[in-house]
Amino acid sequence: MEDLRKAWEQAWSLENIDAHEEAGKATQYIGSMEKGRRIYDFFQDDTGHYWYKVRIRLTDGQAVSEENAIFGHAIRNRRKRR
Image (tube, rainbow, N blue to C red; front, side):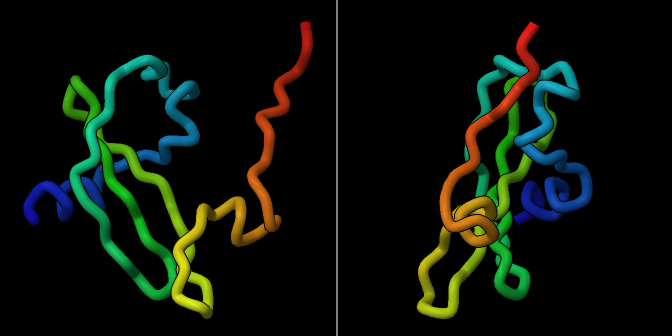
């Protein structure tokens, strides 16, 4: 429970791991917290940093990714071509 409290205070979005120059580090799931309809899944990397991903609880009780809840499907990563 202490890890989750600490993760809640310090975690960065896992979607932005590249921007934090932390890509490629191994992450391990440490637990989840539900606040309203949002479910925060927390992870810790091998250097001790905390990360999170968000899922949304739909009215039917199903938990889906935030992208699926908003857009109805997963979004492809569209990076600029060089």
